[in-house]
Length: 592
Image (cartoon, rainbow, N blue to C red; front, side, top):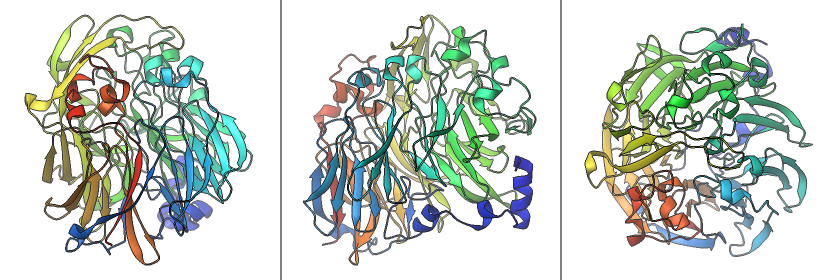
């Protein structure tokens, strides 16, 4: 079925399985007692219908139990709750644990995979992991050295393993897989090593590669149909060689566009959505052109991998703005019409609202007030209106570019509350100086070509902001300022209580209506994981992985001290070790 046919059949309700039959995971995710998908649901709204913990009683939260992850590096994921079992994965060496919630303290099984010891040396921004996936009695586990495992959820036994890349080429895997139908979908990391990104789909039963779609290159490699795949910016077919024409010579072979972020899925349209990362190198003078399709949101058929549409957010990315952040699927009222939309808070500081049926740009608003690399996004062309003073160039130190390369929001997923119709977003309030330089490619070595220095926006003492944001109007309803970047994805609940963590280690509960902090607890280490909530034996629990690290705290994670080290991130959080320390701990809260 082609893309236009999908649109028509959705409208009249005769699409068959794709429209009428929700997958079993889609059905299971509607049960608020569990947490069966990495982002809670295919739509990634990270909202729970549980309401036992309220603004009136949340001050009574206590630690119910804790458990060490066995590792000391950044914990960027979240547990899954399947029935009476909890499953979670640590940072490298990627231990996977199964815990029976009826028998806390006993580890039912632990998976400790053998890994390529070279992999950590090519992990640009800490040896993090964003969690496991589940379907049909199996856990799907991505490891740093690019292996994908299917485990028996009851026993931890390996059912199959597949190799998705090669660390010797600079490839790693840090993202959480997504299961759709009989496919498990995974991406690849390594954009700072000249890796050409791709998304892969494996058969959940056998581990056989079903399809692979590259982000840049030939139409065949990208699974593009030149006559049917839609360019979201122009609303017309992409045409032949749409990527190759935007790179000079063979630069696309080192073109980046890696896929290490989050993936979402619309069962009605039968489309998977995800973003691609920065082009290589970070020196824009070495790669003239739009460098398609890096920094792009893709919509693909999960069964075939064929692209329905693609929308590039930052053509010729000259700031390392990536595009891997999650695409949240909701309905939005735009110009008086209710439209099935995709909302994407990009690293570049703009919140994009697209018609998820065809990739058409509907709105694009700045969600951090310091954003200055572009004046606006032109809704007619879909392209940014650039600020020429902030365009980076070889051998020039361009000052005060906002946001910094870590982005106005990085991987930390947003939350959407259907009751308030607002997004709750953990953001970064940071800027940078950026000096590009010439660099040569060598397999397995860094391929960056820029020297960065990051600092708080306005040179102040605020590096993070939690905001309540209207994606259509662009209005920020309230904000909470934090000393360091906010790198923990918020969780909203039906009672109007929001949970999130800070880089300094505070786990907070917030009143969604006012932004008032109702409760906070200092955990053993900084938080870059994403809280979840579940119900067990009539009691609501909130769980979060703590363990500082990632790019946000790369200096502390890797013992770096020079401000420009860690791709420019070390100086930004030089004082973080005054407030927290390394450590990996699962912390679970309840009212009593």
